[in-house]
Image 1 (cartoon, rainbow, N blue to C red):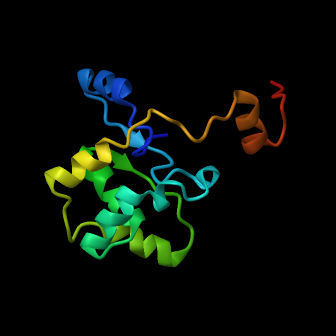
Image 2: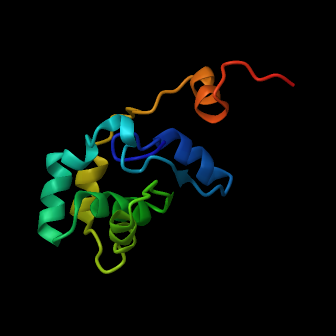
Length: 127
């Protein structure tokens, strides 16, 4: 999980040290966030300035930070919107404003048992 509220600073430093590309899951906060990132006043103001959606601003920020980003959209309209992030750039001040939102606060905090239930529908995996 990686997004403006959980920028994973230490993990990114370690990944860079070993030449590992960071792939961001839940770049928009995921369903558990209930749109928290998309309603952030800093993000919304930057979005308004560019005539873009908050989601586009967040995805563009990820790209400019050097992340590989995979939004989990299934709605065709959102998929189209998500790809329309290459016709503008965030300036240094906007990038810093978004960086300042970092709280190292993850939204998706599933336990291993939670993941097993989501993936396999059970708590116990039998070999």
